[in-house]
Structures are given as C-alpha cells and as structure tokens.
Length: 119
Image (tube, rainbow, N blue to C red; front, side):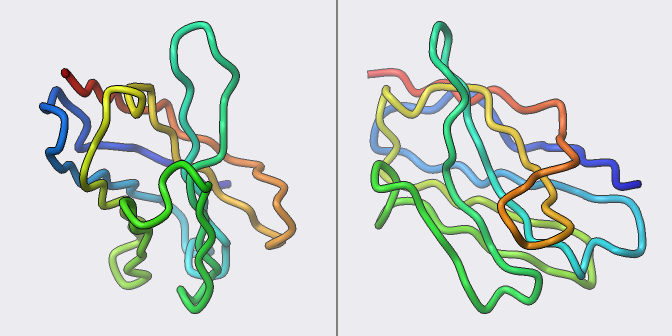
C-alpha cells in the first residue's frame, strides 16, 4: 500500500513557476514508476508527465513538453513537477499517481493540489 500527498500548488500569474511535490509512504516507492495527472473543471483527467522507477526515463504530454520537468528523489520518497512558463490553460487540480508495474496502470492516487494560473 502506498499513500501519496501532494503539495506546492497555489495561485500564480501567467509566465510564472511552481514546483509540486508528491510525498509517498511505504518502502516500495523507489520501485514504482510515478506520474502526474491534472483535471480542469468540466474536463477529463489528462496525463501530464511520468518518470521511471530510477528516473532514467521521463515522458511528457505535448502540451507541457519544454515547460514542465518531472524528477524524483527516492531517498526522500518524493516526486516533483517543476512547472515553468505557466499558462492559464494549465489551471487544474494536479494529482500524482504510482504505477507499481511500470505498465501505465496507476494503482495509487493522491488527493491533488490546486494550481491556478491567472492571465
């Protein structure tokens, strides 16, 4: 069982930056692939970024490529999402998720943190 808690969301102006953190409990965190997803009001949840268990591989949605960076610190059981050049369309609740098998099946989810980008 893994519990995930996100932090770092907030209100920022367009062009600004935020860094989200996702703290995980459990000794198996370092063996899990991790992902970030977001859901805007009235829209379906969408994939943002993912990282392999050892950080050697990262994946991004086209909409955030070049602006967002996913990283992890297995010693701290934490995964990060650095978000730069934020746009109003990035406004959403951001959730992290754990993928134990590394097969794009996310079994554990956090509650999410709100990111609001003003124009």
